[in-house]
Length: 399
Image 1: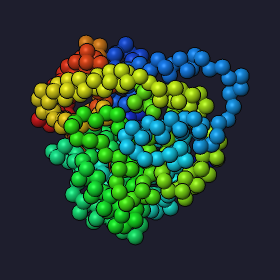
Image 2: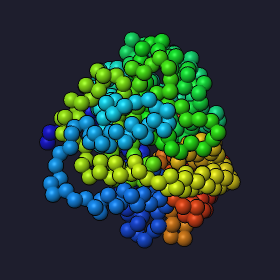
Image 3: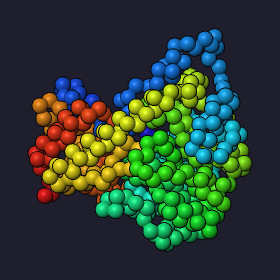
Image 4: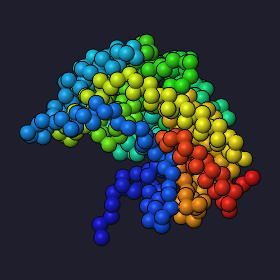
């Protein structure tokens, strides 16, 4: 029988989705599973977006331009201007979700063997896309004790080599919820400028910043305008993950030219998704305030509840809708699988993402999990109780 490729063998499993078969088996046994493992909001998609689907009058569902509808790009440019991100329609390429934007950015900017420096823990799929491009992620590990703040910039400098091609950040951060400060962003800017690196900046969660500190976009940094490749998606802010619409934004003409070749190879981004995304740009401010306030309340409820459980610690996330929590366990992969295969409390269990999958060295996340607060407070209350009971019963508890 033919062997699969080395690339296929090396591709990591998703720590977010790899336990899905165990969750499905638990549900088949009649157990309710609280899904805290994935950033799938439970809040309703804006009515204006749903109306756009209902009112589609097209007679032919045809290809769109490879870089997306001009009307959608124009609305996105206006949206970015509200955040003082000075870009125009020509700087924007519509992609099939933020994931494709990351993939195309890496494929366009990196050669096999090139290195990207990334603060960890980091979104797990970055590793997969780097692997596909033949690139190497060089991690700078942040600590839960410091709230996952940016590590000292000297740690980044130590990793600079002739193979260094870029720095990758997610701001606000997935999986930690950390929001980078102006000072931290300026230090990144200086390093990018000094070594003429790309700055890949995933800013999907910009709508969800919970502190008085401002959101600092990579496009707010002076002197590196041609180095920035911004990644965006409508999935989270409008609760429409399934339409698969994202964007790659850069002022670097050569990067855009290269990205367009990959866009043409996959023909076009989703037609219906673009229609929904364009309608979503007109979502009323009342909806955005409602969503924001809901996450603020859920964040406080979850973090307070976690830190009341003996042996559990979570810093307060300042953005997005995730936190990384430290648990009194021997192995987060084993614990998360055990929750689904061997544990239930009054017919319920919890699904979380082992944090080991968000580090290059899985040992760094052995006693940590990522939790998404995408359920309402009543469900979070039940999930916290189930988690507490599970930690009391788990045979690999460490304290």
